[in-house]
Length: 583
Ligand SMILES: Nc1ncnc2c1ncn2[C@@H]1O[C@H](COP(=O)(O)OP(=O)(O)OP(=O)(O)O)[C@@H](O)[C@H]1O
Ligand SMILES: [Mg+2]
Image (cartoon, rainbow, N blue to C red; front, side, top):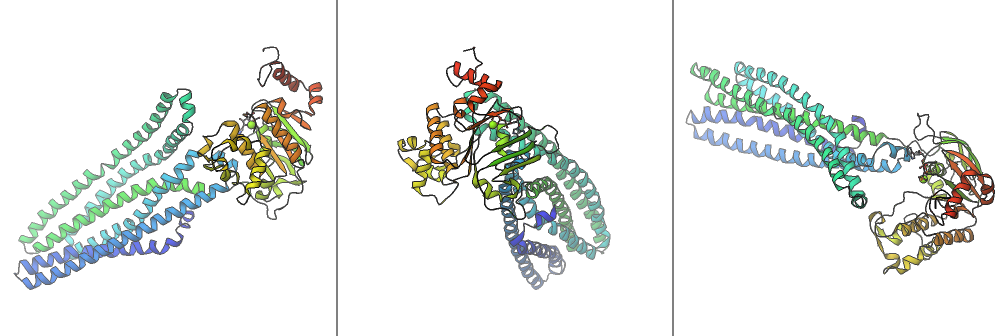
């Protein structure tokens, strides 16, 4: 894990090394100050030597400024190294997410990815900065102060040693307790983010169903979870302070008592006692800081693990060693395909699919919800890999193609489609930035999108809000079809892409396809028989099996499911999924 993360320090290696060096220098200067102070008191004040006071005073100022300078520099480089590290991490995670297959995306929730990219990376940044500065500063400060104290008076210094050991043991217990809770907290953040994201993303649906109360409760539960954990963790952490103070004051008392005795016996000077007290503070403060570093580190271990999961996720859909960069034609063949979403589960969603589709053919796919229509077509553009069997496009296994080539040639208008914020033209050119306006207009005509675009006040420059919230469902679908057409694909798959388009326009789109792109293989998934009845062949899906294949007439004559659906839709007088006779 450390190796994975360390690889992203990259150009900030220098800053990462300079920071601790400055921090150590700062500590050394800091440790000198009580020592000089002792000299001022003993050799200056007590001896009445003004010259000595000026001299050592000037020294002290110089040392203090040097310390300050080192501290500032350490802070500066530390900040640069840690923010740079965070930036690299974030970029690397984002880049890797872009390579994720659909299967990887199923594994990480969107909310989970957002938390990892934001909160977790910020945690790492803080931990890294803390590590660069405190991890070196605290132990060095402790050792220097201890050494100075022993040099001044070994007997009294052993009081610290006892205090350090005692305090150390108590801190370990406190932190162990707190760590447990911090690690529990992060999955809860996912829950909170999921709740916020789902609600904000679907706020219109929430309002339409008057579910605000329910959603608020859900969020409350998630926030309460985090609240509870942090309260528990902080309860442990706050113990740090009283324990620390108790130890410091006990030490001071003990030192003053023992020190006073020694002063009376002339084995210790007042100045020495003063510097000993200052070192006492130094040592225990360092210990305290070290404990905070541990808390921070333990918090960040959970984050580091979650970041590494994203960085190390390898898409199981990889390009072959010698990929093909050319798709011969739009022919498709399924050879005894079995497919399950989870590799190790026995529950396949597609069973023994075996069918050949000719280039330029128009294929309709019909079937109830959950009959695996989407799953079937997702295999063609290799959004998922088959579990058994093979899918061939243009006569070659899809796994032999370069992924980009394949996906450019097999254009899918997904069932859950999205438009991005930007103008209509930008959205259309999203698939191919160099497309001319003429070309864009041509595909919009094909997809019957031109009629409404031209009616808009700004035409092709109309701004589309995020998620396409300012166009209607049918308009969005037509834009998505146009966007897919711009790729000039050999295979065009429409997954329920005209469900929100009226029947007449739907017919017009199909007619345009037949006339203008006759060589493109068209696969049309639909709920309405009218959308597919003119197709060359229609596949009837049921529970992951092919129930029947044939033309409209053949299926009407020989396929029970098809006939039932047809009758329900025609005798119902429209597109309603009612059983025949109920209307
Ligand atoms: N990403 C996924 N992970 C796991 N299971 C899935 C996933 N997507 C779909 N499924 C399951 O696979 C089965 C087939 O789903 P699919 O989306 O292919 O059906 P569909 O025929 O397209 O339905 P619809 O007409 O509603 O679009 C369903 O039982 C569904 O629960
Ligand atoms: Mg579907």
